[in-house]
Image (cartoon, rainbow, N blue to C red; front, top):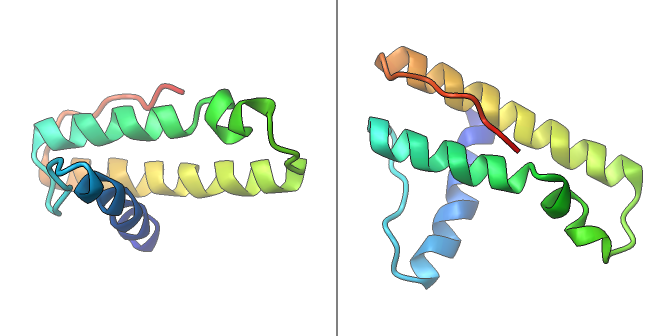
Length: 91
């Protein structure tokens, strides 16, 4: 679960800045659903390419997408292991 833990660490740093609730494992159903939405947002074409404004190589974009897919797989495995109802990550 190294990808998921890394992603949570990164996400929690941002949440703390705004005094929002951080993610703690094991996830509840509600926090799992919140994280699925956040991950879907991160995987959107606009966010993967920085709205097309930054000069980013296709290699960088594919590497970033592969990382998010690894996070998604670990997140879904975590949810299934807890018996949570899973949902699709929609970018």
